[in-house]
Length: 312
Image (cartoon, rainbow, N blue to C red; front, side, top):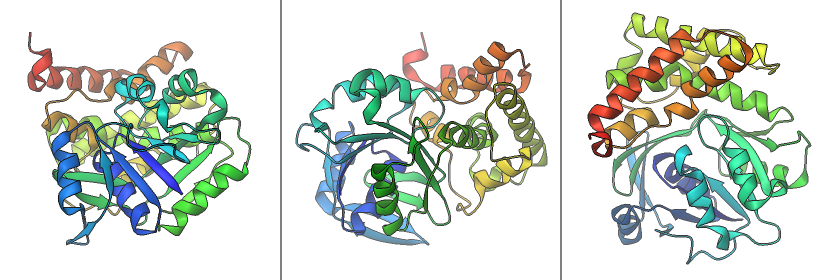
């Protein structure tokens, strides 16, 4: 399968490297020229189990050299979705599918506005990646499942083909007929640890050594679950602490959340699409969300201190 990963940061490189090793033609699109040049020069370095392996990959800063893809996996930061997809319509052929594996909620509607709702698939992955250096990624894909599905809940041949391709690469993937519930389940994972890690600057290993942080993370998840249930969402997670435990399960001690990685790079985070989504949905259905409101406020403050463009 010819696959283009739009927004090949740490997670995109982790997935792209694994899919490439399985024999797929994978293109990694990243606006960072240093990242792309490093991958072109010596391949994508994947660190897995403490061992670095170089994987030859196709890499570019724009979609222009790629041509038409069978599948476009969208992994750009949430606030860049529209701009990135509008600049990559050359990837679309008659049968191209567009799959969002981004954190948070709302990307599918943005993509549908650009490429047509019939092309769009939704999904969530519990796999992770952590950037070590340009073109060098610590991967966290073992034992981490991915769920994908049609927006209308149908079990189509195209979504099964994508799942088969992922599974053949060792990415445990399931087709969901309740993709909105699946997306909320993943949102709970991000709610549990993302903001706390960004505020405290702690890795997963450090985060899980502090009982007070667990109590805060579990409380944030409990709020989100109350909001989902009030909104008629059918969740797979039934205990808030399960989301906290699942978030860090199997990840290396030094692994960092994507929110922390964004802050360390001096970039704004996806807080508005994660904990911020809980706050917005809560306001609509009348469920209070004080823990998530506090986490959003704290991350906004950290962004103000660390992101150069906000310091004025």
